[in-house]
Image (cartoon, rainbow, N blue to C red; front, side, top):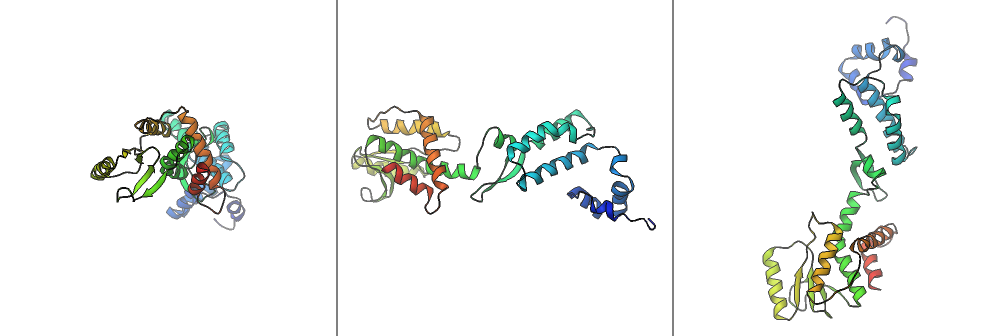
Length: 267
């Protein structure tokens, strides 16, 4: 290399994982690829152009310069102007183009981290998966509390006085016990038998993984119909009401969002 200094080139270089890996694999090959032939004199390559473009977008997102919506729009509109190299085949091009608009890591205000598509977040408005799972766990009891309030009746939670076994939800005015958690079939049979002997209708309504929340709300209404309780409401609107309450109150510090929802519904 003689007395030629490549320091300015190296200082101005945009580093990436692939460049660092290339250097550790073979410094001389790295020199030939990135130093000896200036970028403007070598043929634009599809994979390197693609990697640089995606790295720039990710850096802009995590630095706070751009939102997820802006990143997704720039990816779709700027792909052809940034990725100038020709892909080996149409299949490779399509696979990379689609993958680039898919999975990245996200982090919300509560410290939850999850992996999801940019399209889901920016276009479909999908929220945090962890928050959604927490909402699903709380949803059955929140829903029953909402319906009990509309009926003007009280729900006793986790009481043992009537059966000697804890009942998740018992409504004295309706003489019905409704449980929603996953349980062994034998436990359900025992509780059902004891409740029957005491003149209480026992209903088990578990929220399955495959169930949508609006479908579950309909099943909860069917459970209440077993004690001749009927009332009209839109299940999807019920779900959205509880979701808004849950999301709003979890943003307020100082109290568990589930407890806050319970208190408001019962007022």
